[in-house]
Image (cartoon, rainbow, N blue to C red; front, top):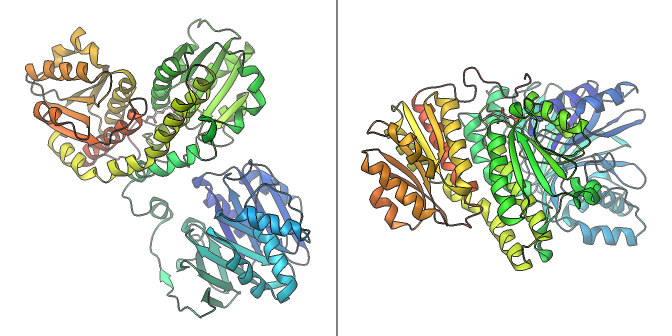
Length: 609
Ligand code: F6R
C-alpha cells in the first residue's frame, strides 16, 4: 500500500526520507522513489525494494534539506520505474507524491494533453504534477498553483508537492487519505502513516479532509479549500512503533482479520473484465501462449496456503474442468510426483520464502515446467523464481497465524478459476454472475465482522475444552482443515479437521460430551448430508457449533450454537465461513491468555526444510 514521506528542516533530507520509507515497508509496496532539492534536483525512482533505491541514490550526492519520497503499490499502471512516484511535469520543476485515486484523471489528462503536456506514466497521479505546472502559468506562485490544482481534482488524495525553485516550503493536501505532519525541532516530517514519523518526533498534527498545509522549517500554515485559516492542535502521541502499526487493535491477528474486506477489494481491483464475464492478470501476459497448452494443474504449498490450494482444486475441477492435484510441498520433494510439460505448477505462499515450497518449485523448474507464483510478499524468492506471478496484495501479514493472506489467496484463486472456466464451459452469464458474487464478498464479510461478539460468546463457552473436531464438506472441507489449524496454532488446543463424510469412518469414536464438533453447514449441495452428520454427533451426546446460512431455522433446532453468515454462492461460501473460524480461534486463545501474534514454536516464515 502506498506510503508518503516528506521532510523540510535543517538536516540532510535523504537519510530521513529513506528511514521513513523503510518504516513504511511493513505496509507492502512494489516500487519507490525520492526527490531531494538542494543546489540541484536529485531525483531517483526504482521498481522494487527501498534497499534498491538506497543503493542507487548512494552513488550520487543527494544533498538538500527538503524532499519527498514514496513507496507505491500499483493500482493504475504496472509497478515500473516510470510509474513510481515522485511524478513531475514536463519541465521537471514540480514534484509530487500521491496516495489515493484521482477519479477524474482521464478528463484532466486529455485537457492537459490538448494544451501540449506530455505524460510519461500510466498513473492517475502524474496528472497532478502537470496540473500544478499549468496553473503556475497563470499564478506564477507555487502555493496558488497548488491550490488551483487541488480545486480541479476529484477523488481521494493525500498529496505532497515541492517546487525546485522554492526550497522553503512543502505543500500538502488531503481528502480521504491519511496525512500527518510531525513537528520537530526546526523541522517537519510529513507522512501517510505515523510509523514513518515516530522515530523523530511524537508531536503530530493530523491534517483533516479538504485541508491544505504549507510546511516550512519553523512554521506551518493550514487552511481549508476556501482559503480560510484552520487552527490545528498538536497531539503528543505516546505510543511505540508496534502500537502505531497495530492501530486500535489489541493484536495484529485481529487487525488482519478486520482487513479482510479491504484485502478482497485489493485482490480484485483491476482484474475483472465485466463485459466479458471474466478476469485478467497482468502477471499472466507473458505466458499467455504457453497457458493454452496446459492440460493439468499441480499446486504446491504448505499450511494455510496448502488449504487455499485445496479449495482451488475443487473450484478448478468443478468450474474449469482442469484436473488439479495439490501437494504438500515438503512431501512433493520426497516422492516421484507425476508431472510433465502439460502441467502448470502453481506455488502458493504468503511469504514467498517458505523453504519447502521453494524446494518443490526448484525441482519442477529443473524439468522446464511452466510455473506460476501466487505470493503476497513482493520481490520474495518465489515471486522471482516463478515464470509468472500474481500478487495477493494483502499487505504485510504480521501475525504468525495467517488470516488475511488466506482470504486474498482464495480470492485470487477464485479469479483464476473464472479465468480458466470462461475459456472452457462457463457461459458469459455465469461468468457475470460469479463476478457479481465476487464484488459482493467484501460487504458480506463486513456483516460477519460486525457479528464478532456472538463468536466471542461462543468461544467463552468452549475455551476450556481440550479437543475439537472440525467438519466441512466440498468447498468447506478445506475450511474445516484451516479452522482446526488456526485453533491449534494459537490456542494450543488439539483440533482435527475432516471431510464431513469421513466422521463415520473413524473419528466419530472420539465424540462424547467433552469433544465439541465445529460444523460448516451452509446452504448448498452438501447441506443435507451435513445435517445428517450433525444428527450423528448429537445422537452420541456431542456438542455442535455450526456455521450456517442466515435465515436457516432448521439448524438452530439441532446445533448447540450457531454463527450465521450471509447467503452467497456455494462456490464462494468458504471465503465467508473461514472468518468465524478465524475469530473463534482468536477469542479462544484470548480467553486462554495466549500470545496470539507470536504463538510458541512457530515462525512467520519457515525458511528451513
Ligand atoms: C498458518 C501458517 C502456516 C503458513 C505456512 C506457509 O497460519 O501461518 O501454516 O501458512 O507456513 O507459509 P507461506 O504461505 O508463507 O508459504
